[in-house]
Amino acid sequence: AQSVSQHNHHVILSEAASLELGCNYSYGGTVNLFWYVQYPGQHLQLLLKYFSGDPLVKGIKGFEAEFIKSKFSFNLRKPSVQWSDTAEYFCAVNGAGSSNTGKLLFGQGTTLQVKP
Amino acid sequence: DVKVTQSSRYLVKRTGEKVFLECVQDMDHENMFWYRQDPGLGLRLIYFSYDVKMKEKGDIPEGYSVSREKKERFSLILESASTNQTSMYLCASSPAVPRKNIQYFGAGTRLSVL
Image (cartoon, rainbow over all chains, first blue to last red; front, side):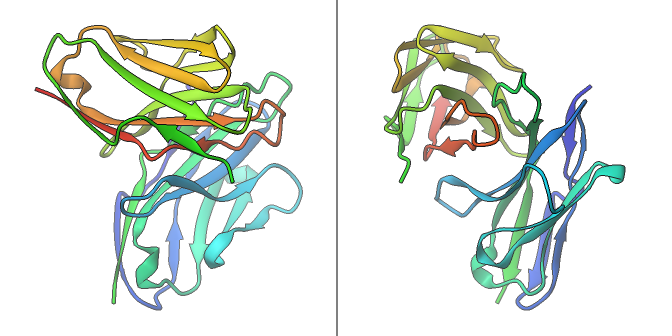
């Protein structure tokens, strides 16, 4: 069965701490991978994406993610978090083949709370 | 900037009422989606549409229907609202082009069914 699993449901960090949010997926074939973020009271917005090429992708606001195909993982990282990074983070996947309908399969989400 | 507009931010309805949630996008996107967002469950796809009058069931279509009469508008219908449909509903749109079909989301409608 297709699935996306985010291991951490709620993470609390102090400012300047490093962040790593785990994401593992089960999905047949070649995949596209995404991290979306939802700041309090705001729209869900794209943080970064992987379609192909360099497995280390950089996104907005200093975030990056590494696609490790052998581990079916796409973990999100940031070296030093800020209070403004407090948000809910979602990992998502869809198929990259010709039958790609654009549908996304989302993980359960991780709530990040950064203490000033 | 892509804009996906959902008609209401908050709605309160009674059990058994018919509920319409409206979504409009202004980027001429072919694909449109309805999700519900619940704590601990992430986003779950209810229905999506890849063209006018075309629709496909998502993962949790029971109790919902959709309508897409115009390309820019995608409506979610709760035929007879129930308390277990209390949730945040998110609409999204994306172009159909593979590898460019990033989804853009609306602000969401928080629906309470009493």
